[in-house]
Image 1 (cartoon, rainbow, N blue to C red):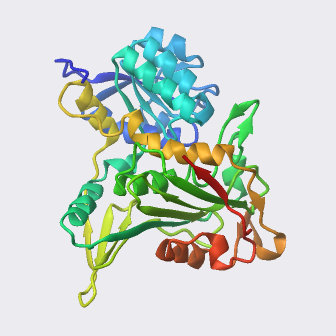
Image 2 (spheres, one colour):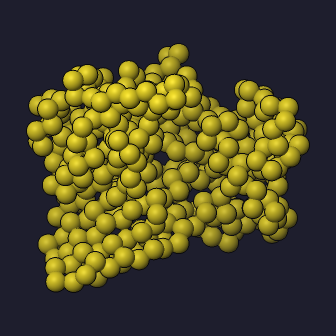
Image 3 (cartoon, helix red, strand yellow):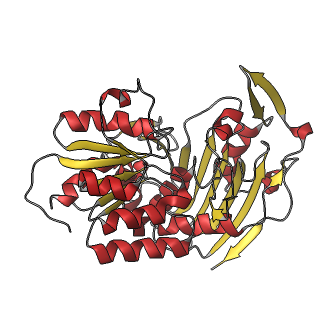
Length: 390
């Protein structure tokens, strides 16, 4: 474990200040005020506007080159909020400059690159935290306790459902959005691997399969938007210990709902709404019991780890199971288009919203029955899922 006696604020460099980078700027502000970190620079290909106060941080040195930024700022911690195909090369630059890392999810665009990242982190002796925020939820430990105590009985399977509304603006926000490849680089920006990556990773954590290759995997990917990647997909895998796990998601819902992961036992079932850290236990003959739990901030955990005060919550190896799923998505045939007759298309303030009739009910039915879309007779779903056996 990295260890230092330095209790002064850690000098931090943020790489990526537009899009999701804005949420990182906002999240950094209370940590900077508390003396946990000190934002010493920001780095991006595109500079901030002249009147941009960087979400309250004010006048911070700007750089358009990571190596230069690290040389000038001597940052000991780098937060990378950049497209997935840049993660490994930029991480290597940071590690070579002696900077610890918080790397946004997804970790890398392939298993091969994940192995390269793990090797680079190990060789550097530095820490690398992956930004799967849901894995910092204390609700995961509580679910594990309930399962371990036999409250659910024998676990029959785990089903995740995600239904969000995303318009054409979501795909217009960046050149890599909705792409499988860009300029010869793997991007893998699909519903399963980016917006609902937490659904996959958290389901694997609950199944105790975070670092394992699945025994088998079936995958169905579709798109309603005119994009390369999937916006509506279902997968089913069997873990090494035999647990069946499904994930059904869409970005073409009429309205967004909190995603939910349900553990099905022969005595009871339990639902985790991972964006809310909320657990609801359903037992026959009892009223549902709902509890809400805390969440550990991954950047604070990383700083505590660097100071020798805490184990690291989400090192790269904890995302290996997720990256097996990502690799299956990456190497699968292109997603099937959903015909126009199975869509409802609306124009809203210059953007296009595409929804699939009945899709919200369908993703929840998949999570409850552990079935793929094609097995639930979705009229636009094909009969032959991609199968991966490892």
